[in-house]
Image (cartoon, rainbow over all chains, first blue to last red; front, side):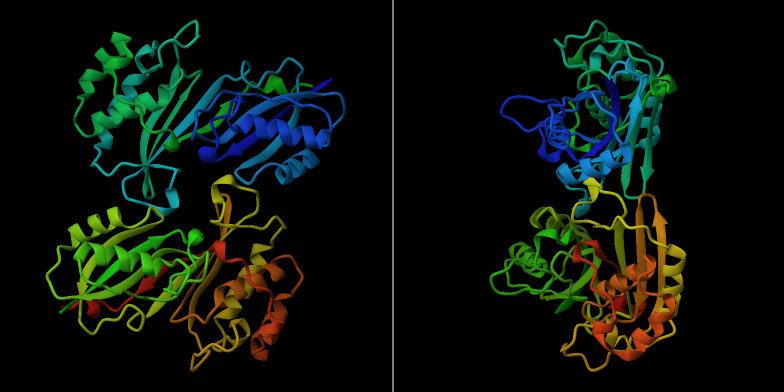
Length: 249
Length: 249
């Protein structure tokens, strides 16, 4: 048996998130269907993480197992013809049988896209937020995030995780052309965490919440003290990192 | 009576082009409707040019006349709330009563976007062309364009123009991130011209047409000698230039 990683990209607008579920279309179901058609045997993929309804991915790895040798160039080509146009496969590689798309990942990076102006080319692809934002202040808040470990204040309650600790290694706001982009990297993310952080930072950016309030909000470990979640359609999973050992076959 | 320019941007996917017509939706009709609602009097806009079905605009100016003073900041804001999400207004300004969105324009610039890889974020926004392209060769052809005046070979026949002469001042292919973008500026463009030029240059890029064939193709003044038109959804009107005198009110 061999295990393969596939690198996927998708526009999440028309999906109820990554994870397969009854009575709703999902990216995972589409990928399973395409691989099952391709190999004429039931294939199930395990993804690096679950994105919510409307959230996009520029890079999400998934693994699957199969009892035959695969030409990965052909796999990428054929998968792209079988997958719907809003899901694509960028690469594929055989990996170690112990490699796991979710548990082997050492870091993940998300971007959150904001468009200050109405933009016909960013419908469902960026959050239209017309208020004036103080990006320098938001970057102070972003720096402060890196001094903390427990992000319960930015997590959906009642999730089944053992700990709410995350090691945030990068967090920055940047003006890029006509967009304002927040980039955040961490070893792991809690459910809804990036959108709750972005929502809170937007309140910092418009002066509704002071940068000094951020530490007490985090320390309170209480979701209701943080800002409302920013909408899903501005969020992109952009990078998932693995140790190079996963490729030792 | 005062004349105003409005600067528009639109995703052309859901429109049968710019120009108003019976039994088909158009960008012009949407803009007329929004302005008519806003001013409670019938307003008709004249655009800088006609884009075909599926063609996009990053910048298209249109003019309209009205018998009252307008706060242009308010106009932009209100127009954006009245226009559908795939059409936006970037700016507005009062112009000289002689200024004409179409006839006063001194230059126009188009971009044509190609994506070599399947890309879920560029559906209807770039032409997916997976063949290997020799961009250096395509740039030689782009340079050659600037040595010619009569572009009948790249024009839809039976159009009602008096001349097929165009002064191309810029034409270049460039790799930009994950896209290959062709940019072309001219004092005017013939119907279908950019898409016919792009289609022909793609044939140069894959070696089907030699760069030396381009001059005879142009000199033949025969559309059937050039390549097939590249699809509409990769094309963007990106800039329209006016002499500064149009703003002398």
